[in-house]
Image (cartoon, rainbow, N blue to C red; front, side):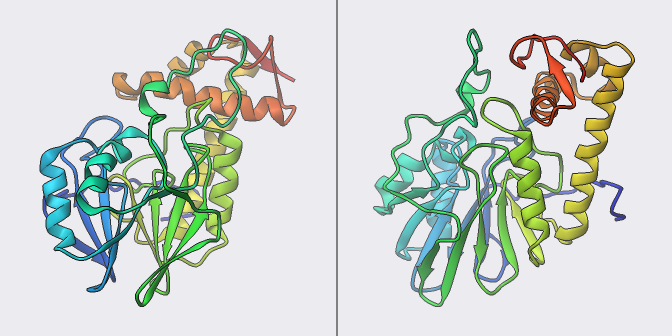
Length: 305
């Protein structure tokens, strides 16, 4: 992969309900909740050794998935339920898993938008956020969660959500990247839940690291993280340039821009594409490159600065 070419890997066997070892100390169990946003399903991870484990992102409310996770845990003590973020496809099973294991629920913070709603704005991502989730403890950027013989370190990666974390599996080169970096697709960045400025800064932060493997919330591993991250960043910059070009030729609203630059996109994803364009436009307005009539909203008019 060159630094300018983004190549997705969609060849992924989820082995639904089966505990699949994917890295030292890490086993993946993929839920059977596939769809246009979840690909083949949500990946839950059981991390640890013979003395204790943590479960990362329990996934959807599915009794079969709960049974598969408990089988993978194999009667070991569960020290914590850790969350990369609080979208319901990652968290809906939390109450049942907590009841079964007694483990505390730990995340960066409760679900929240990356910014306040503008007057008259509706959060189109409301249904995705698990706003009723109860957390037992917060974990901050750089904080370590200790297991016997293994530390898990929180790495703040806001962008997809304001509370998104990646989790470093200490000493192994492995990073659980949640929905921030995925081999099969770009990440949905949908205001006001998400922020493109934050997302790009988080990409830059991960590029400064020397991880050798990313294990995402959906799909298969990213085996060469740094070139993939460079390609993701270049892709986003090219998308930004395409949006600016559409404004220069006279497009003023998001539907026209989406129709021009997302011609081959699955129709089920065009709403998300519109929100992604909005995320880029918000960032461009903040950087002084674009002007909006009123606050930047999904129905606003935009023009070059």
